[in-house]
Length: 337
Image (cartoon, rainbow, N blue to C red; front, side, top):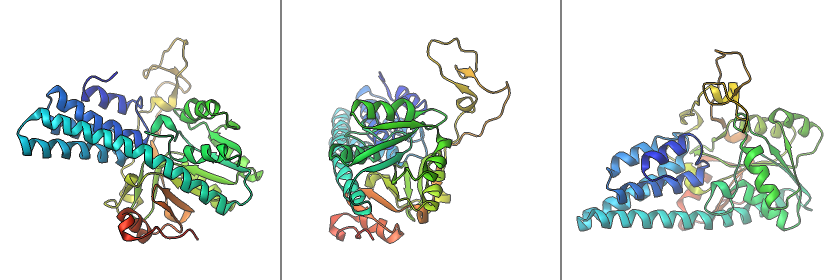
């Protein structure tokens, strides 16, 4: 349990709290917590924002709660009123995310049925995008879950998602809990699966979508996009509008978090004596240097569609994303083509 913002920062950095939508919610509650405990709210907000630099939802949640705090403080001069306002803002964001999740699921299933008439979808997913990272039932996983409930999901292929195995530990758990037909595969088996003609669509989430439609997501997503393009399989990104960052012009402008090497050189094995510096069991020689980016970036030309709570855009263009982010007042999102 996190009793102050510093503990929440550590929970976010260690991935005890993770997933783009949930990070936004947690960031907002973290600001409210700092305000309620009498800490420096601006300082806590900056620490929270910096905990996972690639995930834009975290900054969105932090700034919304911080703005509510500052507005109430300026209006009343009462820090307690500011704390209440920050908490209210966090609760609103939490509720909005749950509502957005349901709408994304509906839009995503409609898109799948349009691209793949007849049902029997075999969907490949990466990392974890379900209820464990959302105020609702998730993003990409929520679409697959809707297909399952509608009787149109034949198989959910679950990438294990090395090195931290979010697919194996979390997505497989959520699929099993929901009674979905699923199979777990190592990330490097995906090519074989495509070659065998066993994938109808790829569904992933996102941690940041740049203004040009470049998508930063858990490392391993970009190779799936390349495989999908070669094998003529739709590659679909599902994320809330808050993940679209129009202030980031393109993929090259996205800061990609580099994580500790021990996540690659060691494995975590419960009830097994640990000897590695990171607290795991070493699987590489002592002193091995590791390359461990948390995310990779998929260019828009490899993305078939981006699905948000406002609808789907395809082809993915800066104009289409900007129109979607402008909301209903700017008109309906472009039709999927």
